[in-house]
Length: 178
Image 1: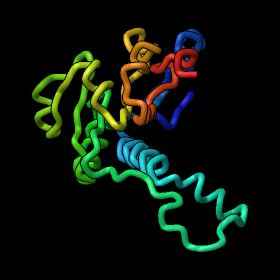
Image 2: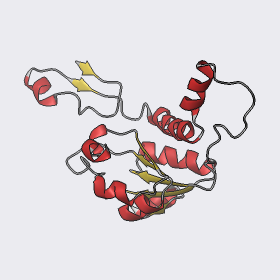
Image 3: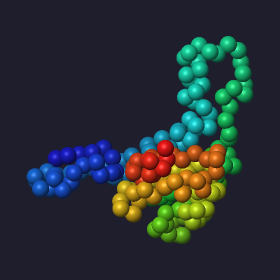
Image 4: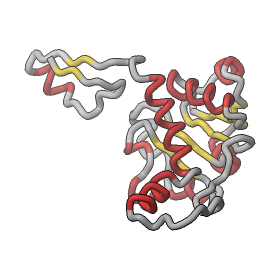
């Protein structure tokens, strides 16, 4: 048996496992809230400059109170664009709404009823890229989603926007990202 503590199992050679009679198991649904919370934590980290302020303090550069030193933008009122409104994306939407964010979503197979049930506005891929202050990705890795985000897509984003991919790395074309 090969068991992975994740939803995705693309990192396991299932063809070889099957050939050798090895069962493959995963844990769909078990990490939904954890990944959604981690996604929001990453948004907080980049807006509140957590890494930079931690380093600043650990390097003993703190000398006196500087209230504007590491302040970042609020999440409230910002637009959160969610690519993939499945279990994890829906949970991210709920948290984003609780923070007072405007939440929009897109995926090739997004049903309007799912968007409505999650209190988000369904938009086109171009709109999500152009309008979002934060874009979070929550898709499976498949032939359809590999390189879903390319240089062309990245160029549509606001210069101040953040792209947070907690799905699979290959969903974003790494060469184009660099």
